Image 1: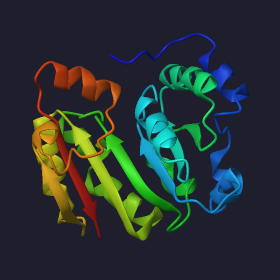
Image 2 (image 1 turned 180 degrees about the horizontal axis):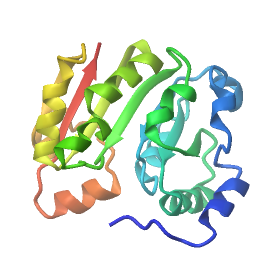
Image 3 (image 1 turned 135 degrees about the horizontal axis):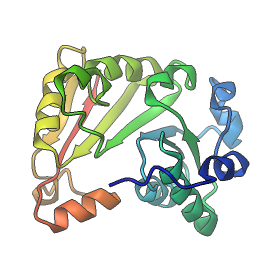
Image 4 (image 1 turned 60 degrees about the horizontal axis):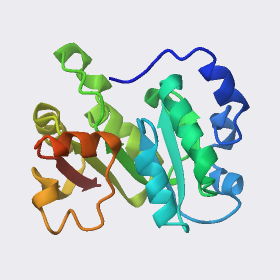
Length: 212
């Protein structure tokens, strides 16, 4: 279960050089923020940041932006970044619904969705990060050949996500219902905290890669 109430976490985030307090001001100029022309990849719902920081370390020629709405969870990522000091990663505390206010058309190279909240009630379907509503938002900010990568151990959420792809005007480039036993899709796989936890219990990990 995610921690959501650490006293003073929002104040720490506001003062941290690793968190962008007014991200909408960087819309269209994120490359200026990083000071280079490297591709920009984002993770929505990054949790404690292990995945995105490991990616940043493995790919120093790519810029990474982690998005997390829970300040107490984002605080953990900031603490890790203070230790690792990776120059090509930063964080934003925000709701994913406003993502088009933060990134310009074609500004993002790739989007990662890892172990997203399943929002199991039907009336909350449009809040699910792989829903067609969100795919429309991703379409606005991704460059033409950009992709979305989605991983989860929740088979119901994955089934829903697969059903949303075609109606939203996207196509499946790759899909597996057992990532860690798929030699092709698992090559170079970077695990999240949840992925390591769930897979150690024997839960198969589902993944897709989609594009327009």
